[in-house]
Length: 324
Ligand code: SAM
Ligand code: DTB
Ligand code: SF4
Image (cartoon, rainbow, N blue to C red):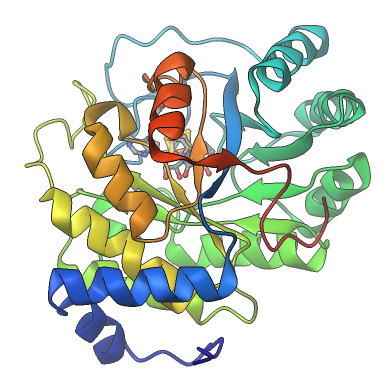
């Protein structure tokens, strides 16, 4: 059997995958995983929030929006040397990629100068570099690429239809425009979304359909489970059925066979068994280290033990990446 790589998915087809009996879906996803990916292998990225809080956007899930009182300490853009030290520590702990996040709508000229220096320093350490800084112009994307940025993370977060229920300060097309600029600059795309925000199964299918129908699939697809943060409008959303979360991972794997599917936010709230099920369904990358951007993540000792119990190896470089 050879599953083809498609870019012409219909919503109904993707919905039909979500509707498969759970075991059938997992079997299909694991079969595709075996065909296209290295089994039992997981790539690890470490996140660092290099500029925290006071973001002018109103993303309903986000503790960093200036509009919600989440008790977060706002922090200015970090010094390059401090970021370098954090990247080195992450490398020593076993991460292969370092992802720098900033709570901006989009970076200013002054910010870009610092980011360029930061990216070069992390690259010198021999790590892959990733950044998530908000919307970019074509010129900014080129500048980041020239500085040595390997990946840009920019999530579509949900379906085009549900988007305006979650964010009002930008639209879905703005996200697609930045993704286009990132692609044009020749960088790897990291793009996914959040589940558990009150969206329907159709919204989940539409989100994955949009990603799979891009001219080129993202090299990395983070699937985040909403971390409900007190003070945000989504603080009291009912938790998603864990099996529905796993279904989202499985469908991402099935329709984007070459992508690294990232089991992202929400791991701290998941049991070891649920994470093992996510890996079985096709997740093969994680965020590694005690913190995501502002919220918690499992400690490294626990992750190492989990991988050892499952016989999982850690990958040296990006799966299916354009540049490593
Ligand atoms: N400001 C930039 C932007 O939004 O593009 C970059 C940083 S932003 C925090 C990166 C991503 O983190 C968001 O797109 C969203 O998918 C994810 N995220 C933020 N808060 C979250 C939460 N409470 N639970 C799960 N994912 C979250
Ligand atoms: C992604 O998709 N998830 C990461 C990363 N890309 C930047 C961020 C998760 C953030 C969770 C909430 C927080 O820690 O602030
Ligand atoms: Fe700002 Fe990004 Fe948070 Fe939205 S997700 S409020 S853009 S930091």
